[in-house]
Image (cartoon, rainbow, N blue to C red; front, side, top):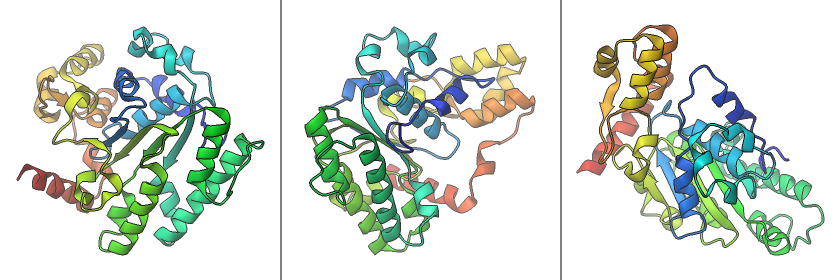
Length: 305
């Protein structure tokens, strides 16, 4: 088990053992359905505090061969699905928080170099006996591992868009990053699932071909993932009954999202804190700067035109 390759399930364990945990494991049904298909590249974009990282942690705990997670899913919905055992803990998973790498690098170029070196280190530690053609080429080395072991890769990237938020006027840096993602992810037979989360939509950068293989599910179009964007009204009503909160008041404050073929969806951060603290407030926007919120609103508004 490495730091970024084949992580453990500690983060998912923490989530399901919290006082409030709402079961969203049925999302795994969708990722299993698109696994190793033309729809295997999934990007989820939504504001902060909508459970993006928690979902990424869940997928890592499920797919990573670096842990044994069957018991963690006891009593959860995905355990009853026929695909559960087929994909459980059988894959090489790279789990990358891109913001972590960017914050430790002065430029995008240095970030990409650092990321390549660290992921390559994990790969060699996990597979020391593989005959690597070029130990400085991460993509080629992943192909070597796949050819010699037969074990495919799952790539999970959290905060994929941090470069575009922090280098929003630097087109050269943005294209350098997109070129890295293209070389890392696009048309690779050894990758059977790529799952990215972020605030900004991929379509904003559609003029560059690096990410055109991704299906995107956003606050504008959530598609089959709509009920996983936040807490559904049924889930919130159950919490209100447990914590003796007024459902009508919760609806007035937090019921702001409507998706096709889905009941109303609520912001999870606000609902959880409202239940735990017994106080109705706008919790989710306290963790995001006005500039970042405005960027997300503007970009999604453009999508409605």
